[in-house]
Amino acid sequence: MSEHSIAGKKVAFLLTDGVEQVELTSPWQAVKDAGGEPTLVAPKSGKLQGYNGTEEGDTFDVDMTVADADASDFDALVLPGGVVNADHLRVDKDAQNFTRSFFEQHKPVASICHGPWLLIEAGVIKGRNVTSYFTLETDLKNAGANWTDQEVVVDQGLVTSRNPDDLPAFNNKLVEEISEGEHAGQTA
Image 1 (cartoon, rainbow, N blue to C red):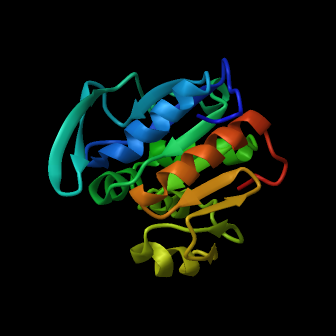
Image 2: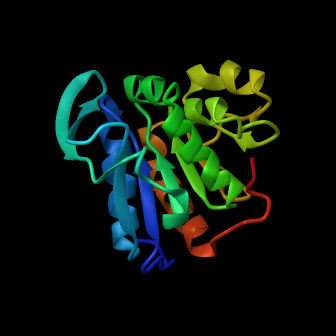
């Protein structure tokens, strides 16, 4: 349980089929436990298929499509990982635009595992300090990010972690950054 309250804060979770389930459910619960209001945003309506590694997990109800979502209605953005999820999201123009809007509005963004792929496509990663699943190191460095192999990296409102083992640290920093609110250095 975080000592930070984010009561009334609205947090968008952007994902699609193939999401690494625990990277959705664990931060989602952390947001709820701290008083925040999570919303599942996806490219399509209906249900999404979660995965536990390569095994099918649970399905999750989409609250709103990313085409209908507006970053100004939210206080923060969470990008869970999962290879398939992240690979499909990063080429979705609406997902790119939605993500970029959070940076333009200086709002906290938290991304774990393969999630930072979308940050590259959204054009918001250059010059930022990040971590990710190790296979993204070259992609992120090529996009101009300063990549390090750490449990969690916080850079002016941008929170990144490597894998599900990092979720306790990731969730703690996610809630802390949401409680702190907008950050002038958090920009595209």
